[in-house]
Amino acid sequence: MLLQSADGRTVASPPLFTQPDGTLAPSAVTPGRYLILPQAGPGYYPVSVQLNGQEVIGKPVDLFPGSTIRISYKAANGSLRGSVDSCNGAVVLIPRDVQTLAFGRLLDCRANGSFEGPGIPQGDYSAAAFRLPINLADLRDPGFLAKVISAGTSVSVQQSAVTVQLKVIPLPE
Image (cartoon, rainbow, N blue to C red; front, top):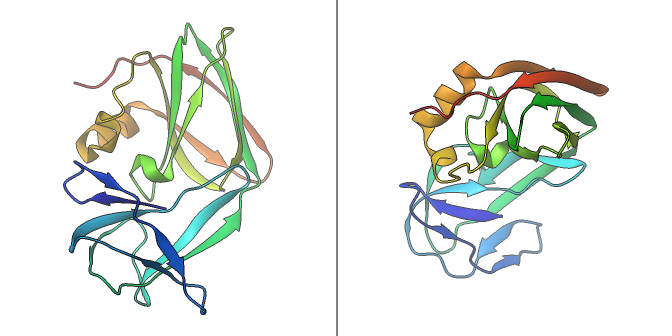
């Protein structure tokens, strides 16, 4: 789990201690407004983030010493694969319901333009291919993400593999 300040300038990962009830408690956190970024991995994804018993997934929250966090995960059985003409970059996959890259994926294009993303949660996404370099700081900007979503291709990932053909799009200004 990462903590990102609400202004997007810093990412902090304080030591966490697991409490007897399964919650996480940051050992030392500077009081302030943060976005809690639970990390997904191959085959699993976060479905719930609770701060002091309240659902806060994808929302900025006020953290103080003594706050408790509970993260629930689910198995991710979907996959996305495809190809991009003249890729030389990456495919950005952003969920339609939580528009932050923390809940999306960045998939590398192979030399032949193909890409593959196993272990993707079921849901509706916007997929967009870009040439390198991609400024990762831009991918935290909600306005930039909205432009990516409007220029991207709609993709619905289910339990079986989904294949899509993409074209490289220019980076939004």
